[in-house]
Image 1 (cartoon, rainbow, N blue to C red):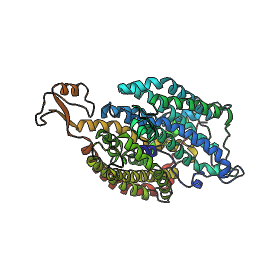
Image 2 (image 1 turned 135 degrees about the vertical axis):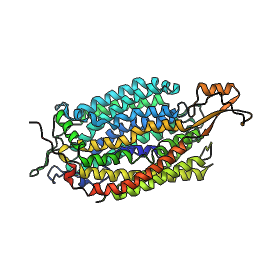
Image 3 (image 1 turned 90 degrees about the vertical axis):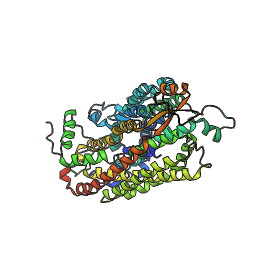
Image 4 (image 1 turned 45 degrees about the vertical axis):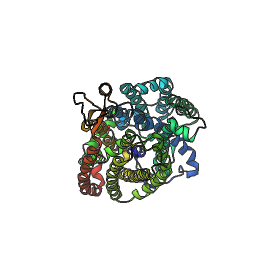
Length: 539
């Protein structure tokens, strides 16, 4: 349901994801110790730079929206849940970008620009991939060649993650020091636009039923926007924007205000020292204890949030109806994101975090029940208003609590991060948090297939079971389904693994919530020196 927004919040996820590092905290809380100076600018003066950031983050959201949103939907009718879980590996680079972030921070051309040295070639490389592989990829999707599709999107996400490292660092110098706090807002806005465009908007325009009912006078068998055409559009868009940035946008160095002893976030360190700093932070007892929370706090609601939209499609709910529902919810999500962000920016961020956790866990149970009782073949919001209304309410509450939790966590990240390490500390925390989103996905989908039981029954007499013919998988049974059909039967689901898995993990989430309610206040009360590592610098 809220797969798009949750991932986008939680992966720097989402509605259901990209985990944004700083949330929507008040701007003055992000200045990292720098005092006002003549270099400060008003919001109006910094608006062009903010627009550049929004544009760059939007371009990152495009491949992420395809990877974590649209592609699982396109593969739903062609692949098993285990195969969809395998495709989730394509999102791994965004979660593990910490592994090469010191390289991005340390290798560059000063003449061309520290961040442009990475942004420009990465975006041009992405455009080449989009333009040259568009038609090939569309064919692979039709054949459900999951391995080839995963490899291509792994590369696209790898490039988007690398660009994100550079853009996060560029935000420190692109915006004035007094406006740096708005970088997270630019990130939230840009990523959501790119993700929404590649997920909800693309699926709607790609769906023949949606286009025929709302956009066409004469119906056609295909949607207005095929996958190949969409990829080529963004390929050329990337080329144009990248050339404009390369030619007309210049970088400036960040200088600390006179009289301060805080190091500039742009201070260059060697690659060896950067990795050593991160290792020293990882060894801190407080960080290791916090890491357990970051990796596990989504386990309870993960099956419901990741698999529920696909289960609705499996029950015959039209993509048109789901796309229309998301389109109606999107303005409410933007408003709720601002409200949740303000609420989470408090002296005790884990209080709203735990409230959001409890509500989100309840919503996971509610979503599972809604999916179970949802009428099969629901074709439109008008024909089945009550089920879709319940779905919308669950989606909005999940989106709100997801934003509340991630913003509260981001506020705590900013409090404990060492400004002397620049953005490396935040990247480390985000990497650990992202592991809790990306790593369990494959297991979730695999266990759904494992717990699901199918059997072959005759089409005329449902009581007669053809037990000697196996029915494996979840929807597309391949040769097994074909063999069952040739024997005069059809594959029937005796037990759907989604429901026991979802409710079982909700129970696990409730037990974890009890543990978090005791652990998080203790972490919040720790003095700041418990979160700082003393590293002897290279000389």
